[in-house]
Image (tube, rainbow, N blue to C red; front, side, top):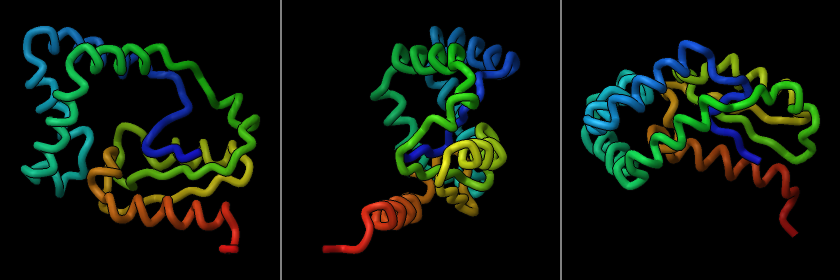
Length: 154
């Protein structure tokens, strides 16, 4: 299992309130919601990277407003998974951007510590959207992790 830029904790009241506001705003101006998310999701050095931001917005438009609302509602309803982390028995990679403000490194350290044998990878100069921001580094980390759990080539 690979856990990238995520969180085992339930949503905070403050975060749920912000999600509710974004859901309400999306009813009339989904594009403004997307524009407002850029600074929260990307490393400061990438918020003005037009091709990257355009890719993110295109992907979000493909998911659509209804999909966005379902995602936000699912996060608002997320249960506290910390007590069950010790039950995970499969090889696990926990990866995040060092500058992820939505799911900070500390939350990834918490998950990795709770899962026996989990490997933690933290990417510098990266925020919440690690697969978009640092695709080669994410791929390299995934390949190295898979090679480690698969063992030597036969």
